[in-house]
Image (cartoon, rainbow, N blue to C red; front, side, top):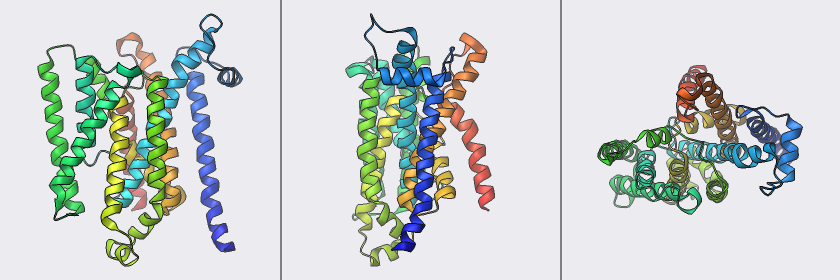
Length: 345
């Protein structure tokens, strides 16, 4: 028991450190995430003061609570969702290149969100319209992929991945067709598709908080089974793991989480692919730790990516506005992943 506790102490300390870095990143985002910078103690004071009524609120209180804090929290939640799901998918599919969008959920959820915006219902229920529609169409995509990959109740990983690619391509084509037939200005939709954190609000964050917490609880409860599954499907079966149930739980919960995130902010590439690799390098392949670490790393990476997009966008002024965060994660994430893979050999 003493050896087990010592073995756990290192990863637990790293998780606490990653959580502290995520909180620090959130504070930095609020301090400098705009045209005006604030001191750390000013931001902390306003957070503890709470959102004051309009007649009593100061400028900094309005900026912190109405603009910067919702956006920073949205980065934490979306990054956490993509990091957790990416790690769970890589574990369950036993594929280091698996990521949250691998089963076609991104294109499926994007159709729902885009249609909601084109119909003007994205602002319903405090801005939850796009997220709700994205969730529905994302789950429909998973149902199609699962149906295509299932043979006599058995789902093969290779068939699942191929079906995900085919369905994802089909959904992308349907999305392009929707935009083409819309007959209206689609710049807003296209900017959202590239990852738009500028529409954050507390109602949408509340929904994603529920999705992240409930989904994380379910996925973390599967980590011991994922550790057994890492030794091979046959070994997991001999250890009493219900492989079919494990695969269904991870895919359904992960897809639901991802679809909600895509419906809320659009497609943010590479984050759910890179974060699990970094987490495993820091915490090892024990999914009890690396899964949680991947969520924390995803949150931190998305905060800094969004901050970089704002800073670069401010250089060009009103010509481009904020750079969509999906562009930033793709530009940084692709080379970072190649470096990690090369170092791994």
